[in-house]
Image 1 (cartoon, rainbow, N blue to C red):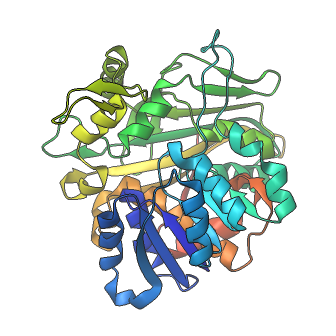
Image 2 (cartoon, helix red, strand yellow; image 1 turned 180 degrees about the vertical axis):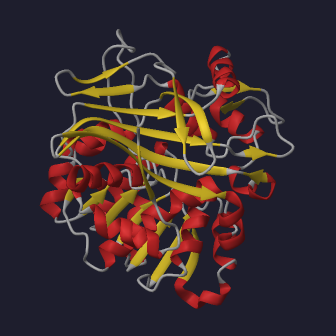
Length: 407
């Protein structure tokens, strides 16, 4: 399989380190707007010969992406950029006749009059609008195939297939006990994406109502995470699973709650109150005159790069899917989860836990596609595929998953 990886940040670099150990990969072209990042990712893989190469690429330039896919004879485009670039990359892959895989879907837009009650443009709507074109072309766009969304959706499908006869509720729950030495505020994932998903109105699904929204940080609950992480307060956050799971899995209710903590929530609220979460460009003084910049990009530039925090980070991160329903007429409640210890991921791969946990899942999916275990055409989520081969291969990668009976 020949892959064009767009984005050589923390997740993209972790993708290269994981994929380098797997035989299914014929060649990976690592492309980034900053050529030095792409070159650094490739340089670290010298022992793997010429299976990796670096290129400069503007992810917003649809035609340039199409040309590169064609020049490099790529079978698939793996999108490791932030959600701003989903649609140009998505369209470029279709135009080039390549398959496509991402870890975050096209952006949402709140309802103009009722943002905390009704959905406006939902996450992924722009991609699903092109589903027929992908199906007609016989090409697959596998969307939301990171850890959350991604592995969490695989867990939902596995629960529906093997653990339950009827599902009342599916709730993705994410928590961690990670700390970063020397920083009062150092997000372990892209702050651009974190602001987007945490400050947008969260989406909830109910079978008799469909998709609707609530206020940010609504419905707080304390969830007890496994492997020593313990109780963490979680709140509603906008996330793709709520938009994906109901398309393929029958459940009465679907939610996503993130363990942010009061301090993190307070800082996000302050950014919002100051307008620093905005993506609209404003003019600021520069050496050669006014410069237009996005306040959110300034915030990201002022914070440490999450990819470089691993040496200062300790603790574990947990992604998982809580499911409640019945099996053989009896009530059942389980939590399917995946935990990564930062000490392990740094020792084994030189990548901090959050970016490694995100990166491993698209590589597993690529291997299943390359070997023909997963096949399909159109715009499909992880729930559209058999879950057991994915979970077995994830364990083979040295990162097993767990199942905890609740109650």
